[in-house]
Length: 425
View 1 (tube, rainbow, N blue to C red):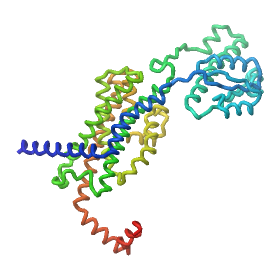
View 2 (view 1 turned 180 degrees about the vertical axis):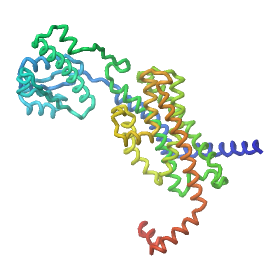
View 3 (view 1 turned 60 degrees about the vertical axis):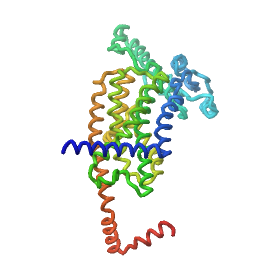
View 4 (view 1 turned 45 degrees about the vertical axis):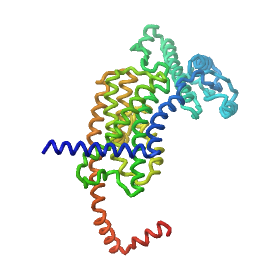
């Protein structure tokens, strides 16, 4: 009996699996998302951010202070890799005009009282105005200016302690009581593409899988069909077969696409791959499985094909931000931190960066892999629940329509007349 049931189960699973593959390869829109977007987007993003380092960003200086300290600051800023002093302007109007003409990408302004406040041991300020048309210009201006500012603060402290009668050794111990060396082994040049592309690659897997599956679900519903009624003979039973059969088709496709994105694309563009192949592959297996059940669960909310493209514009930037690649997760408000747990990309990106970019072992991504396993279990059951509910609605459609008509009649609503007005007939 058990052997017979196993054979029937495997046969049903195989039929559903093959049917779903046929549905995928018969829909041009789904193929466009899976194979064109899934394969081309990683290349496109890498080409766009191929030059992740910008050197000698042109900056204008307005030095109303004209003191020894401001001139020293300007020389040191000009000596950094990030900034090149392109012009020394007489006033802010001239500097602003140069920025509007795109001759410079930032302005450093020293107020008239800059030197006087330093001489009087008061807090002096300077202003930095950045061109926000490109993050790289802003990054360079901020990094170069902040580096020099921190160095100048140390120099000013040493001068003041020396004037107070302290010896050079005492001054050194007071200003820098604990020596340190700044070393960034994974991205020494602060290459913008190194930390951004690693996050984008994992998000492409999640988003294209979700949008492709949602597109197929929306198409079936527009044709008055259901993703959950396969095969019809199950009549609401065999929910696990439906979920695993459909999921297996997407899992097979995206395991190949995921390996292309995680291994081949970084090799083409020289993105660091410091992790073990086997460990990154293990993370990828958990991540793709999680994404399949995630997409299967949330795609049940899609009723129209075009809804997918609205979601693409709204959700993708949010998913990228919630990974923590651009803002530390410890600084997230509690709501957004909890909200980020909805998406597999939150843990997939963090684990991939820990393994592939930072070169950690499997323990470095242990927390993220446990989270992916927990998500996979949760989304598997939600996918089963969605299929069960959809099947129940399909097989009780007449009873549901009767109940709706009864409620509408009690409320004095003519559903046929409303439908006629809505359709414009």
